[in-house]
Length: 118
Image (cartoon, rainbow, N blue to C red; front, top):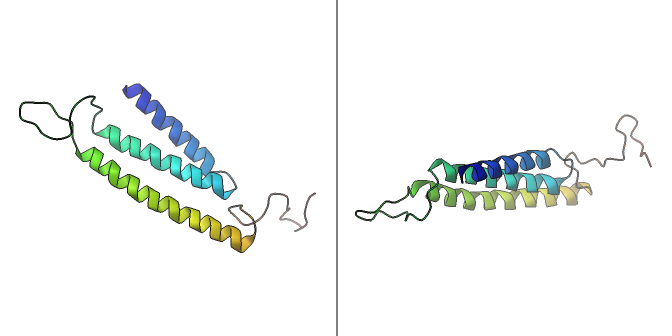
């Protein structure tokens, strides 16, 4: 199970970094969301992966550590807020500049001479 979780974290991180390096705002937002999911899965796996154990202490029974679960729940709420903020900033940038490129210039404009390459 640890191998699957580690692989999922690696794939989410790689996809998140790839999408963050794209030139348009929507892939960047998706990349940031994937990176936050990878970080949440990493935080959750730090507290050891235990199956079928309660997170609440019971006398005489084994239990899993509830602290990583609480950290991940808090991180999920914070990541939703940050994603909403990034979406609003991307939408504002699109409305101000008229393009969804992260630097505000479309791809078909050559910056050396300022003319469009159609």
